Each structure stands twice: as structure tokens, then as C-alpha cells.
Image (cartoon, rainbow, N blue to C red; front, side, top):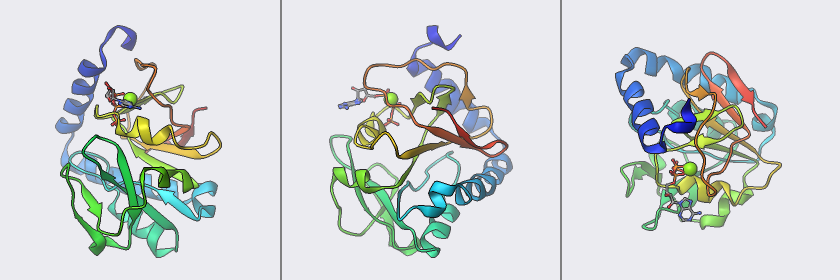
Length: 193
Ligand SMILES: Nc1ncnc2c1ncn2[C@@H]1O[C@H](COP(=O)(O)OP(=O)(O)OP(=O)(O)O)[C@@H](O)[C@H]1O
Ligand SMILES: [Mg+2]
């Protein structure tokens, strides 16, 4: 069914669903997502993880970032560049985040360049939905399509979703990049490719 729906319409529908979720449902999603990710072997083993600080209605990543940092994982977070691309800098705890250009909390540490994402052993990305093949729908800037294009094929890339956001089929354009897995509160990590 999603084949005939435009990305824009689908994105609006999915974001509308998120906005209509009871705040408790949103809040309750953060912990199972965090706990599922913290026990994934690749995440446990990772020296460096590229992640993101959640905004708006996204599943909250604060306690996940904190837990990774506390256990000694080197965490990279994006800084939005004027052209929509993502630069990356080190997360050094909750006090190291400052309000960024696009309204997202961003790391205040020195930027390491757009290519720094390629040094991550695991890459965690936001998404509005992911389909069974790993195709991902984001917020529409193409920022993560650019970042994911720099990540090697063996790297575990994971989109963080609420229940119901893993869908059968998403529209895709040539620039769209797949993720290898998704994590949801009820199902934990789902490997897709
Ligand atoms: N590699 C790229 N270089 C330049 N622009 C790009 C690239 N990839 C995507 N874009 C631009 O971004 C726009 C939005 O892309 P798309 O709808 O796939 O975003 P998205 O995947 O939903 O968002 P995001 O990846 O930021 O979460 C595209 O119309 C395209 O012009
Ligand atoms: Mg895309």
C-alpha cells in the first residue's frame, strides 16, 4: 500500500501518529529501546558508536547516550551543517550538549568532520519508519542518507522506532540508504538485511 503513497504524505502521517501518542507511551519507549541496544553484542563490543540526541517526539536517547558513555564507549554525535550534511563530535556527558543549528542538542566538542562517522563500529540513527528490507524514512533532509553512505557494509546500523513504525514497504529513491536493523520497545533489535 505504501508504494503509491508519497514520502511526504507518509512522513506527515507517521509524524502525526507520533504527535498523537500519549506522553506516557512515548516516555515508556526509551527504557526498553536502551536496554535492548545495550545488550546487542556489537554494541557491547563497540569502541566507537555514532548516535544522536533525540528531539521532539522521537524515542528519548538521553539515558542511552549516558549509559554508553558511562561504560566507556566513545560516542560521536552529529552537528548539522548549513548544507544539511552531518559533522561529528565527541559526546562527553549530558553537560557537553549545547543547542545546535537545527534545534537539536549538539556536542560542544571540536568537530571531527563528516567522514568521522566511518570510524564508528555501530551507527544509531533516527527514523520515522523502516521497512522489512531496512529502507528508512527520515525527517526529509537527507542528512542521514549522506551519513549512511559513508558507513561500511559490515557496520551495524540501527534505526530507533516506536512500535508500529516497522512497516511492510517504504517508497525509496536512489539516494536512500538502508539500515541493517531496527529496534522497537516491544520487539527489541530486529535484523533486517
Ligand atoms: N547524498 C545526497 N546529497 C545531496 N542531497 C541529498 C543526498 N541524499 C539526499 N539528499 C536530499 O535530501 C532530500 C530528502 O531526502 P529524503 O526524503 O530521503 O530524506 P530522509 O531520508 O527522509 O531524511 P534524513 O535522511 O535526513 O532523515 C532529497 O530530496 C535529496 O535532495
Ligand atoms: Mg532518505
